[in-house]
Length: 133
Image 1 (cartoon, rainbow, N blue to C red):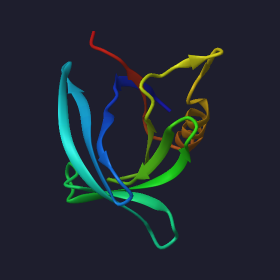
Image 2 (image 1 turned 60 degrees about the vertical axis):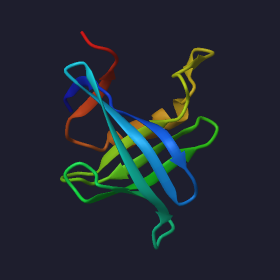
Image 3 (image 1 turned 180 degrees about the vertical axis):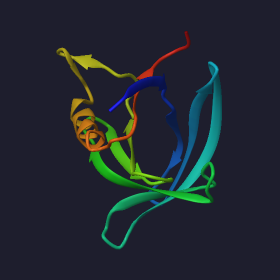
Image 4 (image 1 turned 30 degrees about the vertical axis):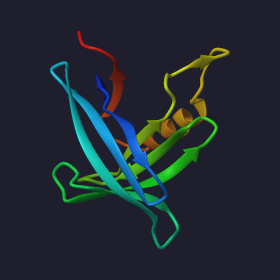
């Protein structure tokens, strides 16, 4: 598996209730932030798996992302989706900062589960960097 670094996209919640979610996705291109606003319907599929169906996702009309893991104590979750090719996994963290507590990441549980999911992948794995160089 080849590892490379890139600036990670991140989501900021604007509105959320039991059936609807509005958020901004921030990405960076050449150190310039690009913010895109999305909305999603929330629900459970026939197997009772929670999902969000994002409207007007880049390159598709809608994109369904399924919740694979949620940790209320660490305020984090893992979502899975298929755009093209293999399943992709996203780690979402709702904490203000990535805190270190007693020498351990606050979201250590979610990160461990995320690492287990992506260890099954054979394609590129990305590591986040912060800021521009």
